[in-house]
Image 1 (cartoon, rainbow, N blue to C red):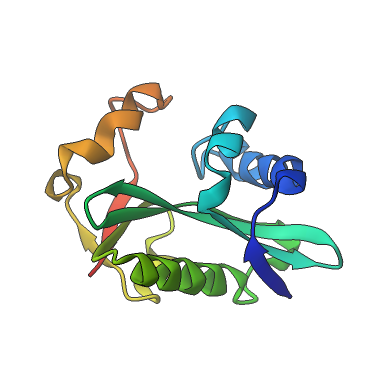
Image 2 (image 1 turned 90 degrees about the horizontal axis):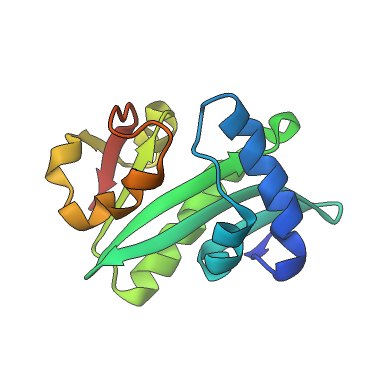
Length: 149
């Protein structure tokens, strides 16, 4: 498995991975435009020249970032790929001086194993919610907030 920063050529594969889970209501959909705008945030896992996993570290505020857009191809789940992507994102955050990393997720057990703890969404700064207005679930968010400090 090769782990690396995402490139322009990966966008269609990433779009496909994200939309597998978005169609099932397990993650938020992302437009191609959003993927291009956030390309530098993403790490991918590649097997046999195919992107089989993606995750992103998105800086939200002063020393605060979000792990988002975690998607692993269904045939590659439960192989440690997602955990390795998160570890790489956290290392990238450490190098930048990020002090707190949070996630909004439907998979709390996955993040718990990586040292995240559940918190109330209200504990996160207002800045975090700026994208919520575009969410199809707004204002009835059912994602679970977790943080790693």
